[in-house]
Amino acid sequence: MSKKFSRNPIKGMDDYFPSDMRVFNYINDKLRNIAELYCYEEYDAPILEAIEIFEAKTSDELVNEQSFIVEKKEGERLILRPEITPQLARMVAKISQEKKKPIRWYSNPRLYRYEQPQRGRKREFYQFNVDILGEDTLYAELEILQIIVDFLTDFGATSDQFQIYFNNRRFVDAICEILLEVPKQKISQIYSILDKADKMEESEFEKYLIDSFESESIIQGIKKLKDTNDLDELLANFDDIPSEFYESKGYQELKKLTRLIEDSEISEYCSFSSGVVRGLDYYTGTVFEVYDMGDENIRAIFGGGRYDDLLSIFSDEEMSGIGFGMGLLMLELFLRTYNLLPEDLEEPDYSKIIYIATLDEEVAPYVFKISNILRDQNISCLIDYRFENLGNQLSKANDLGVMITLIIGPKEMKEKRITIKNMVSEEQKTIETEELIQQINQILSKLS
Image 1 (cartoon, rainbow, N blue to C red):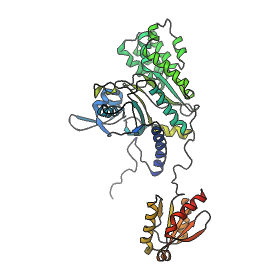
Image 2: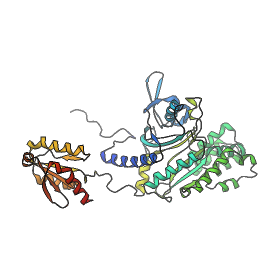
Image 3: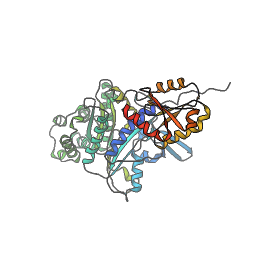
């Protein structure tokens, strides 16, 4: 007996059955429609990429611990892309001279990360990305936040179910350098600690701080950054703040973005959080994470931020950008938590298709002619090739939820006519071929 292989995909990856694809396409289409309302254009890039661009602009942990690396021949290391932003930078650098700014692009790439699979996290996944490049004002931040709000509210989500927590890395830099006097070479370590804080027990977090920093003032300062969701309350915890801090770019940007959010119609969805810093090295200004506020999850769904020098490894041109990547699996879990997906979405909808019941194999050529007429008019049809008992065929059409069935036998073929049956009213009549489309539209109009 030949060897039987496992029917399961490899660990951390999924098969997508038609029912899964219906959910995927429903979610993706809604996101795509919103992105295009804001005039963003779709792009994509190769799944395999030179590893160097990710080593230069993401994080050591992402590349060396969480990525699939391919070395087909010695000296040539490729990576299954763990995210798409460095590829976005490469593509923009290639065409930036002839492209008018700002550049608004979106994508839904398939990505790969070698990490432990868990709820909402796979080794192969789709991530919907939205970015605006070449717009340096904070109105780009506001537009990105508005898109996120539109994405989630279009599914029916409310501010009680999600919040966008925002911060600014230049603001955190100013706190570290001016108020805590952290050596510059140690600031990246603070970002790493804050980014991982939510995944640690309190005792583990405390030990991490003590092992990393000797200064008690720095340790206490990091604790304040971890726990504060009010800007004024955060600053009230520091003594004798110099004017230099209030003049810093990070503080000024954070205050202005807060005002823009308050003046817009999205303030109920957005909150400041000093603990949000994002883990990737290329973020430089505004950062944000979108949180599920329910008791079941209480975790980040996705996030993003501002990057100022991502193009530097491809070009001398300076261009800033801001964007986010939204994992579709995490989004789907969020939507299912709050029952925001339509009922029966996973089941195929046959109500508007035309079912063709065939009474004898000799009518096959005529049936194909009729089906071509339907499809030429963008009307979907399903042909029953069993050529058997009419009752069985009509029963199958009923089970599928079909509203219109065509019955074609030798008599219909000989007379070049068609019997059309309204499956709801059970009325049927025989018509000329030329009347078919008109009769279908009339029945659908009545049933709708």
